[in-house]
Each structure stands twice: as structure tokens, then as C-alpha cells.
Amino acid sequence: MHDDQLLAWRITGATVRGASHRRSDLPNQDALAWRSPAASGAPAASGAPAVLAIADGHGSPLYIRSDRGARIAVHTAIALLADFAAAHATTPALSAVKRVAAERLPRDLVLTWNQGVAADLAAEPISEREIAAAKIRAPRAALDRLADDPRLAYGATLLAAVLTQRYLLAVQLGDGDILTVNDDGTAAHWPLAPDPLLIANETTSLCSPDAWRHVRTYLQPVHAAAPQLVLLATDGYANSFVDQGGLLQAGGDMLTAIRDEGLAAVSRQLPAWLRATSAAGSGDDITVALAVRAGDPQPSAQP
Amino acid sequence: MSKLPGGALASRPLHFVWIADCSGSMGLDGKIQALNNAIREAIPHMQQVAAENPNAQVLVRAVAFSDGARWHLAQPTPVADFRWQDLKAGGVTDMGQAMKLLAEQLQPETMPARALPPVLVLISDGQPTDKFDTGLQALMEQPWGKKAVRIAIAIGDDADLNVLQKFIGHPEFKPLQANNADALVRYIKWASTEVLKSASSPASQVLDARESAVNVPLPAVPEAAPGPESAADVW
Image 1 (cartoon, one colour):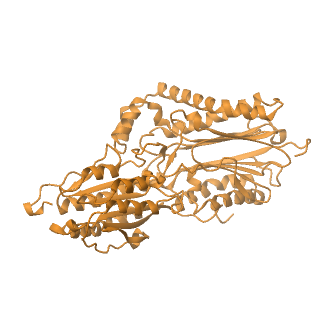
Image 2 (tube, chains in turn green, yellow):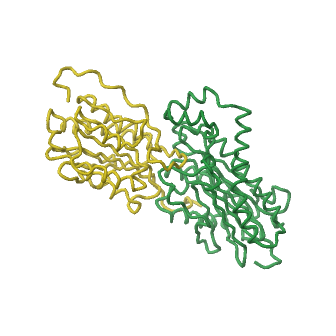
Image 3 (cartoon, chains in turn brown, cyan):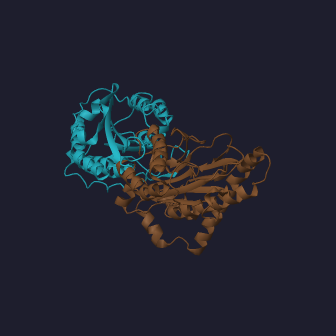
């Protein structure tokens, strides 16, 4: 990237209730949030950071408020990552930024999420009606655990990214995927490859013991070229494809669609795409957040 | 764009494995035929449950053990195509060999990461005659073995409940005791419908490293069978 060329991002995303959740009359337990330069009052090309976050609330019967937990997670991540970017806008050494991100962000994210959950519980304690509903599907031992630690009800994963002029920073706790797509449409997991231990619907979580230890961070300096597209997706998306290649192809296809039809058109179509993908694939809720470089040739619509 | 973004889509595979004791004692009092009948009776119910959840692709297999262990149905078979070939009784109870056979097929190389937790249903009327613990250890060393939903059905009073409990690996869930053909039908149907339904859901939960962790909410076990019509019904 040249010094006189600002790196700016446009963001869109969608979250849809999974086909399986519709059949079971369960809510969408995913959540999505972003803060784009335009949303914060700055023009897209101002060079202000962009922040995006998604979360996947656990679907097992114990996690009776996981949709709330997911919403608390994305709003926590957006606020903390925006503050982080602002606080380190002038920190000279990226190595220092990287170190602080790795050392502080995991603890801050988990602490702040726990505070958000505690506030929600204080405002509305778990009711007998909620417990009665959980009893239908949850094992007795699980309900005992919930009685001991009500914040388990809010369990969720978290994936987030902050995209600045100098670096791209990814944060991940639990399953899901973060992809980057290059100018030629090739996609790769960036930078946090899927954890092979997270199989059979099990994941690390914001409500895990010592959850901060499971938070992975990755900071990539922006040198000659930044990716054209960053894609965050909950695991319902990858699980819908026959193999990982199908997910990577989705990254390239999204970039092509944005170039051909514009971001506004993709924003409009994205929910339908994700619903159809869930129906023919995993059946799970699916959430996708996209950040595309504003300099990329495309119609100028904002989400 | 007319085509959905991404590669080919597919429902998530769910491997369902019957693990059947075919030792000589299963030939007594009509037990093996009762097992054959019970599984055959459960098939349409199993197919219906699978049809109600198109986002899980249920694939059925079966292991038979007596003198050694072998795949009775080796090919993972879509439940819509599943037909049951009768098992025959004869030989000893090499249950440990069955565990090893399963372990070989539950390796990460043969199970896609996107699979749903497998369901393993062990049915036995006796005590292992080989090194069961070694076989179970091999199974539990596989991540998919550890994550599997493991159900055990004891046929008659001679079944080794301690061994079946070890297989289940969770103190809250006990082997199902089938003392007559009706009870066996009821438990086989429960495993192949209610448990299958729970395992078909994409419901996620927190990773638990304990072997006793249950990653699928097990439905309530059916009531114990009413008393047999006559003493001859009791195994």
C-alpha cells in the first residue's frame, strides 16, 4: 500500500435462523454487529478503523439464553476493539500493539462479557418458566450446573476483526471461520485455522472456565497488499459445505458478486443466500460478516 | 448471482452403528431372533425420524461380535436404503474386538470434521471373553469415539452391566435392561428414533474434555416394560 492511499472498508452482513431451528421452533441464536467508518460519521475513505463481530450462541438445552449471550458478545467486541484501535492509533511499534492485543484483549473481552451477562441476570433473573422449559430436553446434571452458575445459560462463541490503516487484527473464541480473499479471488483461512479439537458440536466458549485462555488473536501488518475481502462466518456456514474447499470458494464468490453487482445488491441477497445454504446444508443458524476494501471497483452503495 | 456462493452443499453425516452380540447364548430362548425382529421393526420409524430432519444424513452400519468381530453391514448405508439381514448366534463374546473395529472406523481420517456425533448402540447378553478394556481404550482414544453417543442394552440377567456401564461412560445413564422381547423392541425403537433425533440436531455446547461428558441431550428413557405374560418370556 502506498502512503498516500488510504485503506478503507465497507461492511455488510446477515444473520439467519437455521432450517433446523425453524423446525424446532428455536430462535436464531447467532448475533452480528459492526461499526463502519460511515456509521461513526466518517466517510468510508477516511481511513477510520472498521470493526465487525459475530457470535454463535450454543444450541444445547442448557444454554437457554445463548441468543442474549451472543448479542452481548458482539456488542462487547465492537466496543472493545474500537477502543483498542483508537488507543493504539499512534503506538509506533506494531510488535507492541500485537503483544498488548494478545495479553489484554482476551481477558478484557471475557471480563466485559461476564459483566454484561451479570447485568442481564440482575435485570431479569432466570425464571421458573425458563427452567421448566429446559427440563424437557436438558439432563438433570446440566440443570444442576446451571443452578450453580447461571451465566452458563448465555454461552456463545465470538469472532471479531478490526481493520485499520496499519494492521488487521482478528480475535476468535470457539468454532467458526475467518477468511481473507485476495484480489484474484483466492481465499484462505486467516489467520486462525479451524481447531481440530472442535468437533461433534463441541466448542470452546465465553462461558468456559478460564475462557480467556481459549481466545486466539492474530495481528497482521498491512504491507504492500491487504486482502480485498475479509469474511467472518459462524460454523453453520462451513458445516453446510461438503468440504472446506466449498467455504473457501464462497469467499471468492462473495468478492465476485460484490464486484459484479455491488455491495448493496449483495447485502439485499445475503439473507436469502444464507437461508438457502442452511436449508440444503447444516440446518444451523448462519451468520456472515463481510468487509470489502472500498477501493475495489464496485458501485458505491453503502450498507 | 443465480448460484449460491460456495461449493457443493450437503447435510451433515450422522453415523449410526448397531453393535450386536452374536455369541452362542444369544441363540437361547429366541434372543437373536428377537433382536433381528426388533431392529427390523424399528427401521420405518428410524427412516421417518431421518426424513423429518433433512439436515442430517443418517448412515447406518452394524458390527457383529462372537468369535472375533466383523462388519455385518460394512458400508455406511443411507437410512432410506437400510435393510436388516438376520444375524445368527454362535461362538464366544469378543466385545473388545468389536470396540477395536469401531475405533478403526472412527479415526479423523475417515470421519469428516463436519459430521454430527456418531451414535453407537451396543446390545449384549453376556460377558466379554476377550480384553474388553483394551478395546474400549482404543475406541476412547479416538476423538469421535469419545464424542459418540453411546447407548447399551442388556439382554437378560446374565449381561455384564459393569462392562456396559463402562461403554456408556457416564454415571447418569445406565444400561437399558431388556428382559423380554417387548422390552427389547421398545429400547431398540427408542435408540433408533429418540436418540437419533437428538443426535441429528446441530445444537452446540461447551467443549468438555471429560470422557463422561454428554454432547447430545439424551431423551427420557422409555418406562420399564410391563411384566411378561409368562415365565417363558423372561430371558
